[in-house]
Image 1 (cartoon, one colour):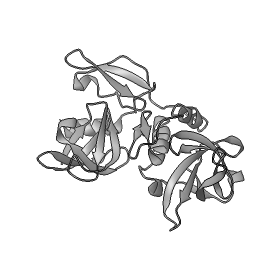
Image 2 (cartoon, rainbow, N blue to C red; image 1 turned 180 degrees about the vertical axis):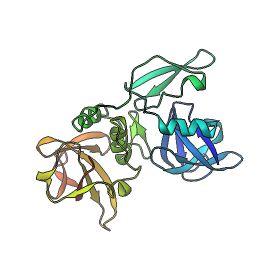
Image 3 (spheres, rainbow, N blue to C red; image 1 turned 60 degrees about the vertical axis):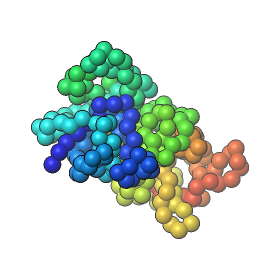
Length: 250
């Protein structure tokens, strides 16, 4: 088994071993992973924090030793806590890193990080909404995980991860986590609401707020009303997503 780490700001993960492959997720600076298969130009990897598998360009990561991988797995997270910070690379050049990037391995990459980071210790459920608000107006981007472009499941996963909790990468998988609630009235801010399509396939997720509001990604990260039918967009004056279940993850 081989191991790697992302040494660049934001790197696309694709559904095939080609630059033409669809971006299905992203890997952020400092995130580490197992290399399942290495080809001439792309490698199939399994991300450490959520076990998500996809393809990455070989030029966009560095190999690390198994001992480094195991140490990173066993250590407390150090995640960049501002929307954007910078590291100085081995040539003295600045490189941006975004909210939620892992900076613990920076020195071993010959990088210098002087910004603010958070190890997520002492975080409570109420902190989830504070973090979620940092992403307001982020444009919807399929496969995105950053304040410059994000999808629905990437949004909830990022917010939970920054606060020290693990979620899977895709909405349907996240819906298998936690405890189902019977009614909206039982929910608390930070609980997750899942929505399905006409075939019953879960294809959307958002985070509950107080007073029957929800923060989610629909064109951008936005706040809408939610009722027993689903999400009601007051601008469009119609329901846009059909509610399937609300889950208490924490």
